[in-house]
Amino acid sequence: MMDYKLIAEKDEYALIQRGSRMQEYAVVNGLDQDKGEWNYTCSYYGFGKYSKLSGEEALFKALDDFRARTDRDYISHERLLEVATLLKDGLLEDDADEAYEYMSGTVELSENEAEVLGLDMDKYRKKLKERR
Image 1 (tube, rainbow, N blue to C red):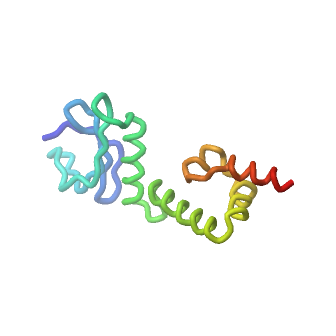
Image 2: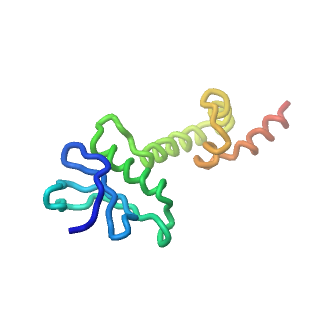
């Protein structure tokens, strides 16, 4: 039996913190709290000294996966990034200047958001100044 602490449970899924050092968040299926066992692990994210993830990052990833499995109206962070990138790429292919204008004006992307999506807003701003 593995040590664990229940964080959330919905339908057949549970989000737990587990491990000998309790440095792993996992989404499991079919948790039996009386036996301290589950059918299988859907995903897990380690954190701490031997991991690239912080505790907060591991918890977010596990919670994101848990919500994607248990909430029909939830779209995972990874999927939203994928969709946003595909939309951005499509807009840029059609008309890059118009796409940058739209993302800067209508969408009001922050510098960080633009960077995450791979947009060079400085290049766009310089191009705008050159036109004026």
